[in-house]
Image (cartoon, rainbow, N blue to C red; front, side):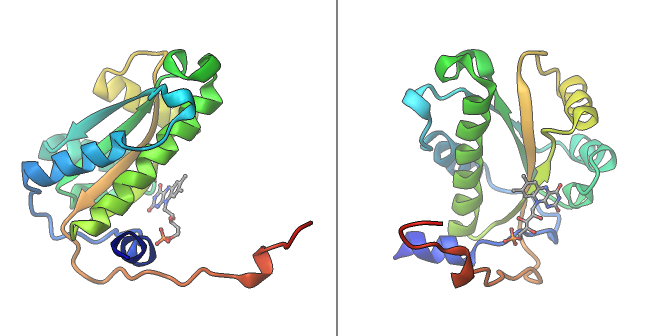
Length: 171
Ligand SMILES: Cc1cc2nc3c(=O)[nH]c(=O)nc-3n(C[C@H](O)[C@H](O)[C@H](O)COP(=O)(O)O)c2cc1C
C-alpha cells in the first residue's frame, strides 16, 4: 500500500522552499537508487550529490528547463557507465540508470520531499556542460540532474491513466 501511495502521489516538483535537506534523507535517496534493478545486476551507475548553493545555481543557469535547481536543497546527477553495463552496451547503462532515477523520485515522495528529473542526456551540449562542470570522465554519461527540495505544496500529481493505451492480447 505504501508503495502504491508513493507511486500515485509522485509528481514533478518545481517549486521548493530553498531549505537544506538533512543528510540522513539524502542517504535514503542514494540507498533507494542503488536498490534498483539492473541488467544482469551490473549496477553500471555512479551518483554525484550536490548541495553547494553556488554549484546548484550554476547548474540552474546552464541547464535549460532546470531553473528550479536554484531553489532546490540538493541535486543528484545519475551517471551511466557503459563500460560496466551488461555487454558494455550504452543502452543497458541508460536503462539501468533510469530505473535508479525512478527509485530516487519515488523515495523522494515517500519521505515528504519533492523532485524533478532535469534532462541532461541525450542533449550533447548539456552532457558536455555537466561533464566539464563536475569533472566527469568522458566515458561516463550524466543522464540527468534530479533537483530535490522541500516542496512548497503547489505541485500536484496528474491522473494520466488512459484505458485507450492498453491493448489486450494483441495490438
Ligand atoms: C527524460 C525526462 C526528461 C525530463 N526533463 C525535464 C526537464 O528538463 N525539466 C523539467 O522541469 N521536467 C523534466 N521532466 C519531467 C517531465 O516534464 C514530467 O515528468 C512530465 O511532465 C509528467 O509530469 P509528472 O512528473 O508530474 O507526472 C523530464 C522527465 C523525463 C522522464
